[in-house]
Length: 116
Image 1: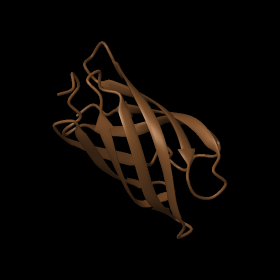
Image 2: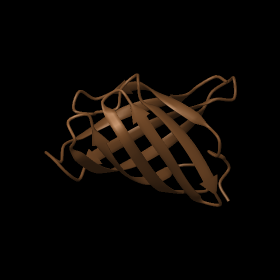
Image 3: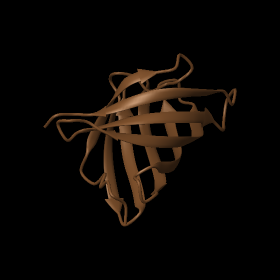
Image 4: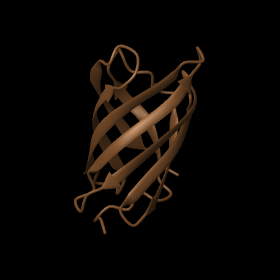
């Protein structure tokens, strides 16, 4: 079992590389069962997306993602995520990702948990 539980957490983009498609309008809804993590995401340039990940004991995520963008393209990629616990109990996710479709470029992004 991981030290971080992602279940029921909601995230939005804080930063992203120029070659990424996730933006401020994209919302991620996370779920977790044991070490298996998954999420649905949409908004901004993303019509519909899904991700799956294995969580390590320290909460890092080894992730695969896929989505359809507003141009109707099916995009896929891999991502390594490192969580940061903020002083108010929320999480910030530091992501290093690479497309496995399209130009296969790579980038970094940061997601932050929303306050609810």
